[in-house]
Each structure stands twice: as structure tokens, then as C-alpha cells.
Image (cartoon, rainbow, N blue to C red; front, side, top):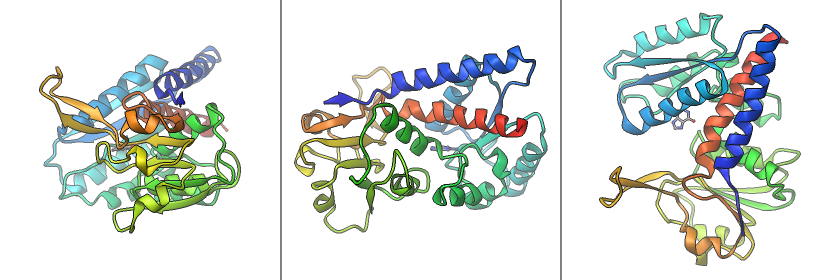
Length: 292
Ligand code: GUN
């Protein structure tokens, strides 16, 4: 069994980006600038956005945090989006999800300038992804593709089973794994909450990607020998013995499943750290597209 070490791979990618930033600086260019919009004070969202901003500083990007009250109206948020779209000093930005219930998420995502949509959530970018055109790939799926590539995991002709059809992970993952080229060229089954007998699919899968949010869902008796397992789950499970009062738990029963796997991601330290690295990579791409 080989561990797909997202922590190390993300550090490698970040140092590659830092090298590019240094080159831009040396030639007198403008460094990439990423902004993150956060609405409200949700603990997990604040943690993610905080580490996005810290990573920007680490690699020499400019960064801006836009913190808004959770009582903000949809109209006021749309005005903010217009402002960010018009800001020539800004290369890319993200609106951290989820948004408060009174705001239509789809409407907000549609308002983001596709050229600044480093999350790759705008329908124009999602469409380009499906059509195999160059664009910003959503950060988590992009990170998974990078892990598969850097560890040279064989994907061509393999049966990939994706669990979960979210717009952020499962659905784009199913598209990317079926695209032409490497990594990709897989035969994909996208399973979800209405799928009958998920085990029937997982038991014969060569590659399993779980984005479910159910701690320890995937057990050893649900997979075959030699399977490749990518665990996107990051549920906070209460644990009084831990200083933070919780432990981050994946969708996969790691102890059991890892014994049968050829490759597997740990949680934490697998897919999670890759997401931020890929957001930074998209921001660098946004900067470079402006130069071109
Ligand atoms: N919430 C959970 N994952 C993400 C992500 O990748 N981007 C944004 N903007 N919000 C998220």
C-alpha cells in the first residue's frame, strides 16, 4: 500500500508556485492577487478561508479577505461581486460556500466574472471543463487529479466509482475521470443517495472516490484487493479527549480499507491540503492569462 501524501504534494506544488512568483517579481511584473469573500462566522468556513489567506502570504501572492455580516442582503452581496469583477488589481476570487439561507447561491456564482472564477464553479467554466477546454478546474477535483498524476496511478480503462454527486466534488470528479487523456480515460459510475446497492459497484471498482460526509462509511468488505481509494470526507466528529473537541474523520475506515488498497489518501493530510494548493495554481493561471 502506498499513501497518497497530499500534505507533501501540496507543499511541493506551493513551492513550485513560489518559484513562479519569484520569476514574476524578478522581471518587474505584478504578483497574483487572490481575494476570498466570507459571509458570516461559520467555524469551518473561517478556518478554510484563514488558511487560504495564509497560504497566499506563504508563497508571495497578494491577498484580500472580504468579511461580510451574515445579515447582508443578496443585492448588497451582488454589488460587492460587481466591485470585485471591476477591480483590475484582482486576478481571482472565491465566495466561500455555504452562503446563508436567504441568499441564492446559484445567483451569486453566476455573477462572478468567469475569468476571475478560480473556484471553477461558474457554468461557463464548468461547461468548458466538460468539453475538455482549458479552464479553471474546481480546486478539490483538480487536487485529486494532481495526486493521481504525481503518483502515476493508472486510470486508463479502469472502473472509477464516485460516491456523491455534489457540484463541488462528485459531479466534476465524474466528468474529469471520464475525460480523454491522463489522468482520465476511466469508465465512471457516479453513485449517490438514490443508488440501489452501492456495494455492488464499490466491490468491483478499481478506483473509489468518496465525497459523502459519512464518517467511516467505506469498509474493507466493500472493496476489492488492490483498489485505489481517494477519501474526500472531512467530518468533524466530537471527541472530548482531543484539544479542539473534535477529530477530522474521513468517509473511509482507513485501518480496514488500507490493508486491501494499492494507493489510499489519509484523512487528514490527503485531499484537504491539495485543495488550497490548486486554488493558488488557478490564481497563478488567472494572472498568466491576463499577461497573454
Ligand atoms: N466550501 C467547501 N468547499 C469549497 C470550495 O472549494 N470553495 C468555496 N468557495 N467554498 C467551499
